[in-house]
Amino acid sequence: MLLAPLPLTPGHDIPASLLAELTALYASQRAFHAAGGEFPDPDDIRPEQVAEALAGEVAHPDAEVLLARVDGALVGIVVTLARHPDPADPDPWIGLLMVDAARQGRGYGRRIAETVEARFRAAGRSAVRLAVLDTNPGGLAFWTALGYEVVDHRRDRRHGRPCTVLRKPLPTPPRTPPAPSSPGAGGPGRR
Image (cartoon, rainbow, N blue to C red):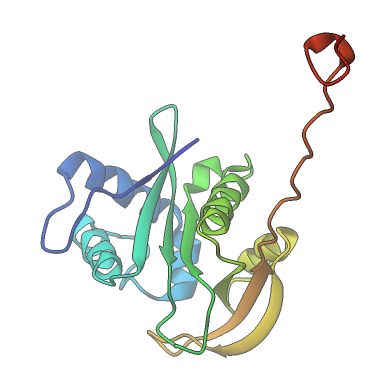
């Protein structure tokens, strides 16, 4: 799986072929969008709506939009936030993780989440947070199965919808000690 940044900067358009892929991905998640209410008609998600939503994401200076591809096909998208707008919150956030509905159940969501966690860990971050809308019990089950724990219940910042905040510590993997030299390999035991 390849996880690469969306080639979009504020004030620039998404290439038409990529926007068509993204629109198909968003449209595949009708139930998610119906529960979230971010699109006026979840049965008719339009390219200009997807472009506007993604432009809003990349407008935030600490946001990153990453596309997940397998064998060249777009299988998912993840939006991360390196710093939360609340200065009292030290953790980075996953703002959105969406997998094409036709490809769910194949482990792509898990792999995307693990890759994002590894990126944050490599950047020296010790935990990651996210919020799941209370209208999305499947999303809550997914994240808790990945080891995220509920830490709060509040309304989301953008639309005031009730949600559950989850957090996962990102411990540094233990270091593997170097293998001892064998006596015949030119190490300290060589005569």
